[in-house]
Amino acid sequence: MVNKTLQELKAFEKPILVVFNKIDKYESATFDPWLEENVKQELMGELRERWGRETNGHCVFVSATERRNIDGLRHTILDKVKELYKIRYPYRSEQNY
Figure (cartoon, rainbow, N blue to C red):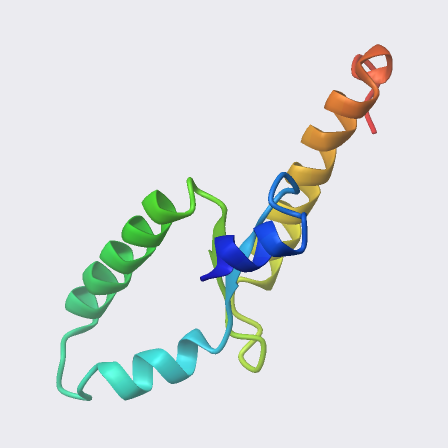
């Protein structure tokens, strides 16, 4: 559905980053309170892995209300901008921007 919409908008060639917000709500709705923490972590790891494959690694899971993984989102965006900058300005790629 997303890819079709992007194609209609003629933005399919643009970089895509899928942000899963409200991951805290997902966890509270999905996991029973008696479930052990290591099992929850394993299930969340599988979810991240699956969506990582689906999006070619262009996804981030955050909880804005709990401020969880906000730095991860910032770093992902910054890395993508740096990558695009190097493509756009290859003659400046030796400098640290």
